[in-house]
Picture 1 (tube, rainbow over the protein chains, first blue to last red):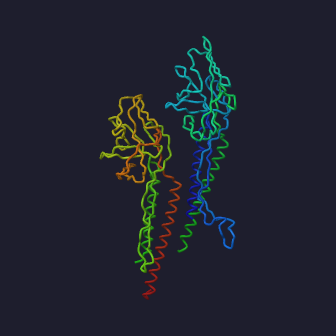
Picture 2 (cartoon, rainbow over the protein chains, first blue to last red; picture 1 turned 180 degrees about the vertical axis):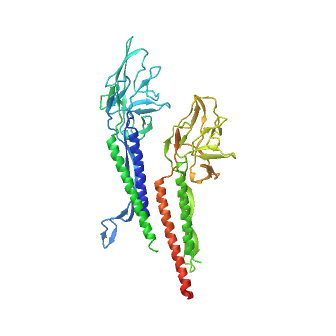
Length: 260
Length: 244
């Protein structure tokens, strides 16, 4: 009876975390470059009373086992890396990657972080940086004073036109063997881990790398309709587990009241 | 007289303590950094069988503290700090000894020192952190605990870890103390500080409700046993004594 109670309670805890993940997805429905997460569950340790295949006497083996589980536990938040829709903003330094790839950003402590959020700006000295002020790596030349036109081609060729002439450069983006292994650190940034593989630098629109679209931003890939369905599922699963808790409680009450 | 009566009474006592603990955990669920308590039952000898066949046991309840990480909540207040990891903030208790806490809702006192809600100075490198109360520059703390006011680096918040936090004794108000001279605070290795967040109490209402149900039914079943034993004794007295 107690096992039923604790299994149902673990189910409720799992659905609570599911709700946390879903509401985070919904909160970020307008975040540039956001990739939604999905919570994955796992069943827990089984208590085996007798195992299949054990001896039943006279040379026979038991065909089935008697195993009772102990509930469910969240095991991973899987990030879904589908392409978000592109929204045309017209901003000169707004960039979206259509396909595989991340922009490289340098953090204040010197390490590199990666992002799909291409809403870049320049500071007073012309260094291209993110909204948090982190310089963008990968080959963006410093924008000289008096630049009248900035053009970035889908294959990453940068051209700054000033009155005196042009400055050109080549932007490179990175990709990972296992983007699911990247660590999300907030600020729309991801960091490399032992599970993601090392970043592979490459030219956009070649060898499977995505192309850069200037003047557009990649919107969040959260599907509101799908998340509302998941929300309903999580809520009903929570409710049905609470019914199991109530049923276990009532059965314990019945057993206590055998002796009146 | 009857060992079973004492066993039932001990069980009811223990479950009552469990219920108290559940109520306390639920009431503390809004306090930042509060660590929930867990019940631990151990078997205590209740008596020995007269014929030497064995001993009777009864439960005794004791309290353990659960140091699991609580949820981080963004509060938007730059003087709220949350610990992410197994570490603690070190503060100076009124008697001069170091205390440890997870509650990071700090403020500046009139002298410009960084203090906790109860006014205890937060330790940094053995002393307190002094800020200039007239300087309007914002106070920033990075993930390693380095504190700066504007562009001046003022120091580093003392973050410590213990390899056996279960041995810490609670001093009330969310402060812990290490009584074991062999368990010294270690400099934090995997702990980080988040500014603008508070760490919620690590209570899980669902599990507390499941515990409450279990405790209540355990209490009820022991009460039934006690009632049954009482009826049996009463029956023995009335039937054998011949009185009605």
